[in-house]
Amino acid sequence: MSRDCRALIDLGALRHNLATVRALAPESRVMAVVKANAYGHGLPVVARALGDADAFAVACIEEAMAVRDAGLDQPVVLLEGVADADALDAALAHHFEVVVHDPSQLPLLARLRDGDSLPVWLKVDTGMNRLGFPVDSARDIWRQLDALPGIRKPLGLMTHLANADDPADDFSRMQIERFNTFAANLRGPRSIANSAGVAAWPLSHGGWVRPGVMLYGASPLLGRVGTDHGLEPAMTVTTRLIATKWLARGDRVGYGGSWVAPEALPIGIAAIGYGDGYPRHAPNGTPVLVNGRRQQLVGRVSMDMIAVDLRGNDAAVGDPVTLWGSGLPVEEIARAAGTIPYELLCGVTQRVKFTVVEHAEG
Image 1 (cartoon, rainbow, N blue to C red):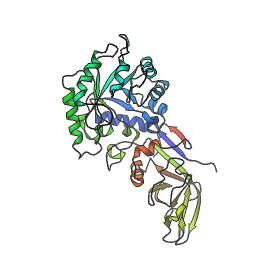
Image 2: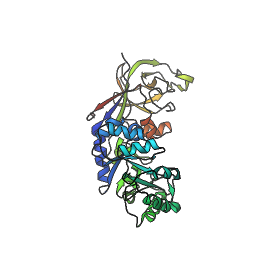
Image 3: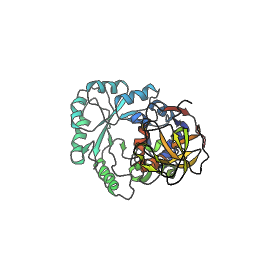
Image 4: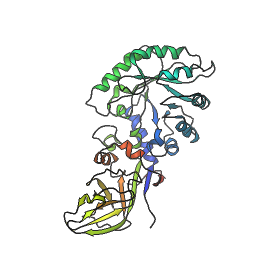
């Protein structure tokens, strides 16, 4: 039997999730975030599936080019901007939009000519202290950019929410108010909301929202799963059992013998491990679906295999195993492994066979 570890990418789910974003922010235009290979789902495939988005957002020139190579001509926003002349030339040639977030970018943009008309977003740091100009200096940067001849007017204004995944944390409200105070009386498009802003902070919606993880079916909010928002998982990771065996009471499983059988019981060995992107630190008890039924991970995750407690499941070699996705939220696996859904989705490796479907069954 050949190894059958797969990531099923559901185009219908992607489109459904985009429609859900529009329903949550009906007055906003949607800038679909497809950076990091579309959160591990495959950038060209995802961008084409999200072809009704008003714009796309990426981290770098290479990702922006992948959107163009996918045959899409919507605006593409470079969230990390440009750092050298080659990147600036590529942005001009392919009609990308550039985020300006650091003083080092200003001399580069000053080289633009009258006819260049580069679309620019000014990133304002309202409290995340990552990228962007502090509020007390951003107005001066806005004036400098507005005076440059090669930049399209009006400038866009953007910030990023740091704690929006926690609706009980009022820091997001402070960031929104700080941004709106700064932007008062300034013309141009504005963008605040990430996925968590879309889901939990309507005051952040404004002219443009920038959904990321929710397009892929995962919840951006602490303690929630995608279905709580009406989202559908766009990635389902599956494999098959390659062995089954019976353990006696006291038998140990896996490297280090970290799990001990409490009684005589069957286990199954599934063909997936950290070499495929399954989290190595997933603990005993992490849920796994075998034949659609919930079972528990036992023993340490290996490079190529995991062991699963098969009590109550009449499973056999070749039977299907789901690690996350349809029927098993990726958020649940992430919580068990002490990480976040973003990392699991982005971490699926090239050993896994990606299969694209119009709409997954079930």
